[in-house]
Image: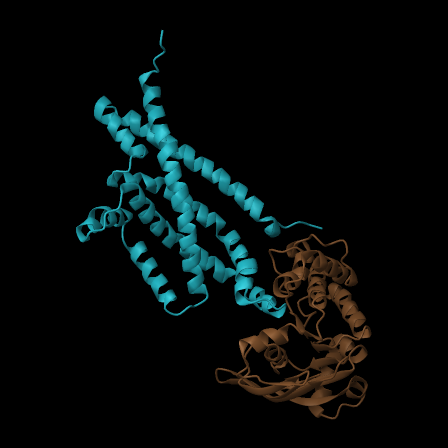
Length: 224
Length: 247
């Protein structure tokens, strides 16, 4: 006698599997790329590198001033008309990392500027170069300051990956729509989707707390 | 050892240094006194290139430099012979006391870590912090932080240490421990240029006093003579005012 899963569990699991196999990797890859973009974009502004700084400002201005959905459409549906064809998944990774990178860059830039100027001066006075001071003193402190906001960026990103369904990436929302088309139970299925996103976000919040503790030892006040 | 001539520095329309000359011989402990706004701190910052002077020359160990046009390479080279202690300590906030001291050795001077740690611990021991190696700056009192900063300065074995009002940010009861360390350094023969408001330190520890007022050196001389018989009326007024405050 074979045991058939009840239909609700079957639906829930098939969405959850899409979450684990698509939403999670999409988020991780995208966020890693976004962080690289953000740190570079923030640093060229902080270091006031002429030319690159202007490019950074333009990039941030453009990304923050246009909807993510439009950016996705531009790349996936727009670019083919000029001969640039990108598959759905890489297109989603590209647009989401460029998008998250712009917001995170502003967070990191603000955090860099919040590091006291004396830290840089002290570094010079012990003989360190600008790059050494940035890498070993200023950036680590800025990243610690930026951590809570970057956590927000990450949680936003997890939810924003649902937009990738609009450019045919087979993630959770896409799977949900497929099931609804057969079963006509939109409320139930979308509730599952909401619950799974909530679970992902909750886990990330915990990870963020843990990270803040781990990297924040020097900011903890102790009476000695 | 160091001779600086005709330093000028303006911030916008405000002329802070109006042609200052100073000379420092090896082993001298010089106190720079003067009212607020007289340019003491700016002078020290120009000498260590934290500010770029508008004009002036420096001779350091027989080499000459134009302060307004000195190359980055020369700045980096000269900074390795000097150390700077800041008013507000400026310890690296993400580094422990020991890491603060070893950072310049390991990163800037490419010293092997084990050797740097040995030197770092010795420097911290010397300022009385052998039980604070692994404390972060915010786990230390102001006096302890400033002593770590002095250890950081010592560790690089500089030819001279510049002090920019090293006790001005400290609570009164913590000033003594920092001055004691500085006194010990002076007795050990360290060359020091100290911008300070501590007349007791200037009187008892320093060998020479430079008195600055309105961007110029108004009077300079051996400490004893300076305090016993100042020539300038402006200096006498300044000393009277401080004596009154200390009573």
